[in-house]
Image (cartoon, rainbow, N blue to C red; front, side, top):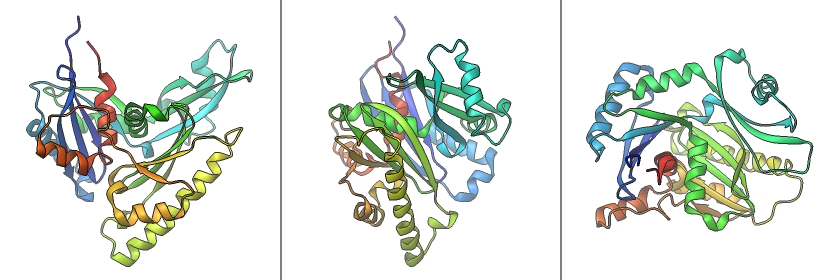
Length: 313
């Protein structure tokens, strides 16, 4: 029988790093932590790597947990493509379809994909992610630690989706629109009947974090309008008007009242904050209870990463 694993889910954001450690043996979350970064720290890879590794060593509970991390959706191209059902070489067909979306040669990218729900058409719908190899290597270099081996490198929007489907089985039917709102990037995720369907990104300006109140309010207002427009445009890709629509928010800005109120004011759906620990056990300790309430929406991606191996062994 395989040994039960302790997993650190590491959401490596440009402004805030979130860490969630999950013990498969105890079947509970054992650590929740955040590390705030200055924007200039990303320019010094060696210094940032040392800081990250020392921080993880300090926060981890298990002696030798494995690390599952993610790259930002800004460094990946995620597209649904259609391939003939009788296609013999799926890999080549996918690369041919994705070439239309890539600005660099195919050899600059690594690919992963999954077939989406069956349809009545002659083509099968496949969700494809193209990762820039240079970014994969960069993230690996930042996290590399022989005492904390990096075992999986995912994309953050897939991990946020994993946290959602783990905690909200009651939303298995219908359309869900998840906003992953971080301090540098807004990602919108379309899910239908428990499957990831599509995503889009809205970068936030570098000035957002340090902006004065008036400028910050202007950025938030414009961004919320963009989110609404992209949401409405995205609905057109569904053949029928989806039923049971839900609007979920997670990420750094999920607990920012100004952002949450502005978004709630323009969206046609009632907003719900993603409780990343709704269906996950954690130590019954007052300190943890308070931390969970404060950080649950922000830690969705880290939790989704940590649960990649939930139940293994």
